[in-house]
Image 1 (spheres, rainbow, N blue to C red):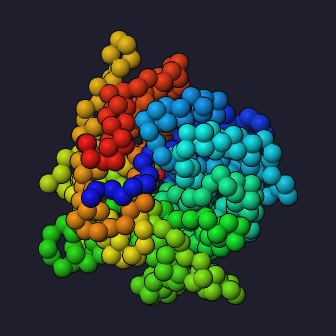
Image 2 (image 1 turned 180 degrees about the vertical axis):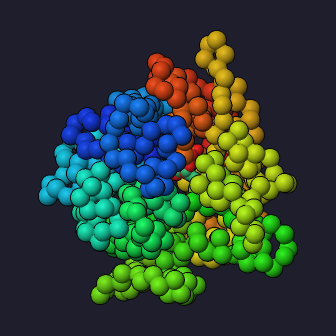
Length: 474
Ligand code: P53
């Protein structure tokens, strides 16, 4: 009963949120480097403001992040101590191709990840690699306009070929794009898009989406060709929409909001554009830039599994004035009066996790992989630097229990579970360090002060025990 033997337990990070070393060993500048902490961040990540370089007015947390670029051995040893059987991380594209359009990759970048994967291998930790986690080389934005340009598909394809060949035998699990549906909400992060004055923003987003979907299918194809052992997944920012009331108008609004998110993975797992999306785009006069061969490519190269992040459910209302698009969470939602909220206003809903898993499994009937879940909270260390994070333990225990119900009681096939940020890292949404998810505390504040020292929190031993007992002892 419970989770199957060989169920993968671990944690997840993204290159720009942990590595630092932004200009070392030939790495090129990327979009994620130039997004600052603070109030200007939101308009930059949503592509509304052009901000393509550093200035003196802002602090840029990704430059140094938690310095994992130099400390990965220490950090992976800590993951191993917790008993991780998997570690999800992402590749920094501009380490491999600093500008994005070079002929040859940067060897030093390739060596970095090779060493990192070998370190994982030492502890029998299976890497789960996100090829792009909100990042794209800045040169591809400046010269080509990011993913709105079809040429970027070729550059991505090249990156994939290099990765699959070089890391054959070291990496088996791949994700093509992190939270691909967030392209609609944070297009600068999701697709390197900065909007021009007066353009049809929705059209630009769906053009970029098409290019990413084509790139994802190509990556899947190549991964399977290079090594039939490779398993490729799509990645959804998950969280079901509930209707505000039983009013059919609200129910319909919730269905629409769900579809907006599922659109991407509908294509990646079913191999074709869903009719509801084709009709909507047609009505709005948006032409999807299909090229010869695209339809077949999508059809023939669907993903092997569905991965997703889950933090919260959402609520939709037909009355869009109720819907608040805040900085707290990039998706518009209405407050759910039945749920409590975190310090950052993310609503806590463990049962919603099971509901979301069922929704996804009913829709696709492919194995699922939970690749992000966790609580971002303020931690206050005592004099010894120790954090008693019972609130985090409770959040995770409730969610793991719900996930177990989905497996045990609903029969969902689940490959594994990685918590978000097993070690404290830079927040994607806000750029803060103080929004902490980790089992391991990192001494660093929102403006880069601190020793970067790592300290185990109370949750460290708790998660160790969860893994040891394959999720039985929560
Ligand atoms: P932070 C919004 C909604 C859902 C997931 O988020 C999101 C976001 C972006 O804020 O991002 C994912 O750091 C993402 C991670 C991110 C994590 O969730 O804003 O894949 O990169 O760090 C948590 O608290």
